[in-house]
Image 1: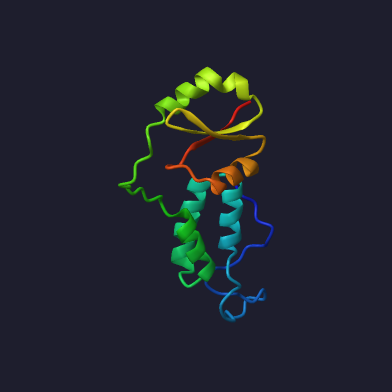
Image 2 (image 1 turned 135 degrees about the vertical axis):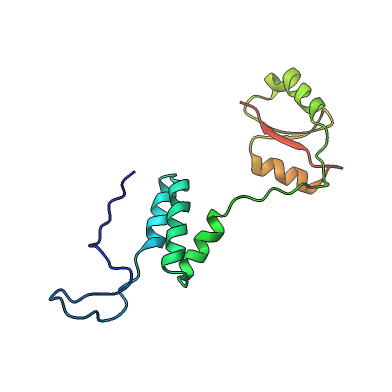
Length: 142
């Protein structure tokens, strides 16, 4: 993959005088953060991670790279002691009754219809007004 830059070549270490004189000091920072963002927008996550590694070595004090370090860090999977209820009865209810509730939002718990509404907002309002014993399965039936 080739990524075109809209800027001229930037020396990462020093800015040189075009007449060949001695270096004048640090160059403008290379736009790593912008390039990483563009790669992510195009769903090139692996390339963004590789560029972030290079960028972190070249400009370790760039605070924008800390943001990308967090965003592009590998996901962390943690086991939760909380288990959801068995949804087999709810799925069976959907198989048997979904044709009767076409276009509706339904809330199911333990194979029973807890609430129904034409919109998710209305369904949630019903559930908030009279909370069920556990979290119901909310589904829109097409």
